[in-house]
Length: 96
Image (cartoon, rainbow, N blue to C red; front, side):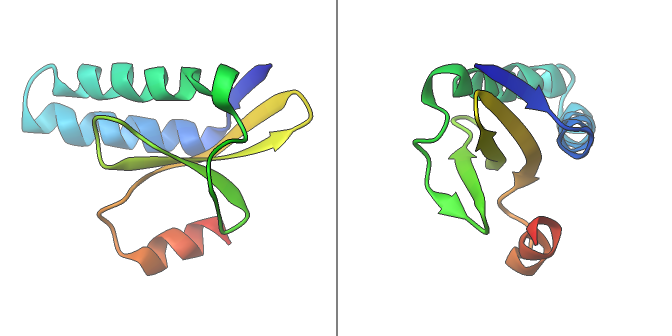
């Protein structure tokens, strides 16, 4: 299984890092460690998550974020890593 984080999702992770790092020193690093751990779980569990807007959605364990991905053959493409606290219309607009 190959897990690819696409450019848009990478930017989402950078934005999340910056937000949490401003909140408390080191929290941004913890955010990235946690989200990458969740993304790494896709090596084993890709495809078992519910489908929303045409993407499988993995809810992060420690932060209010969702990882939206598509399973294409033996490749998992992570399309977005979005904050679940934002306006749902914004999430829909991003994913459709």
